[in-house]
Amino acid sequence: MATNSSLKSWLARAVIEGALIVFAVVLGFVVNEWREDVSDRRAAEAAMNRVVAEIETNIAQLEAVVDYHEAVVERIDERLAEIEAAGEPVRGIPFDEYPELLPRGVNAPGLSDFAWAHAQEHGRLDVLPYDLVAATARTYGMQASGVEATWRQIVELLFAGPQVMREQDVEASLRFTQIGFTELASQERFLIDQYRRVLEALRASGLGREEASQ
Image 1 (cartoon, rainbow, N blue to C red):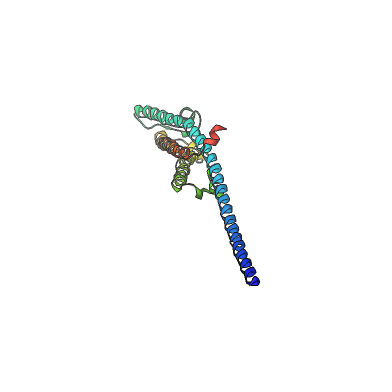
Image 2 (cartoon, one colour):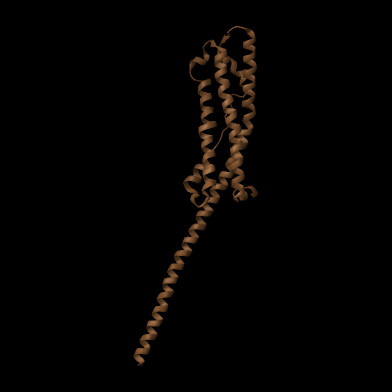
């Protein structure tokens, strides 16, 4: 009987100890997963805080050039009105028109996407709300396919080889240039609006506050 009692006691202890070991192992997995989740969220928030700062800088860059680009459109308009008033085609070298019409050159916005590219690669963004990340991605896409692409096209148009130094119909050249700057300024205004919307959503989600307080 004593042997039976000892065996039952040992089995009871073994069951309890086994249950405790299993509980400890499961708890360890849960704690590790929780730590990884916290680490991923902190990495995502840190990455998006940098994106917030980058968006703020991009907005400032756009605001610094959009008025100038709109003024270029107006100056070209005035020059075209002069040509029209002349009553006959005006021939000349397009490059000679630029100092008056483009006193600051093309004046690129100088936008950045480094923080966003880094966030996509290292930021663990899948732990953040999908709509927030998707809206940010769409806006950076507008930057690349809109403003930056149009700016490059304008540069190619204005400085595309020796033809800009040859005598030609000035009006036609100016109209192409005006179309480019009109499109650029319009895209800049639109991008500013979109960036502000995204910035508002990011801040509403608690992002960027740490950067702003530093």
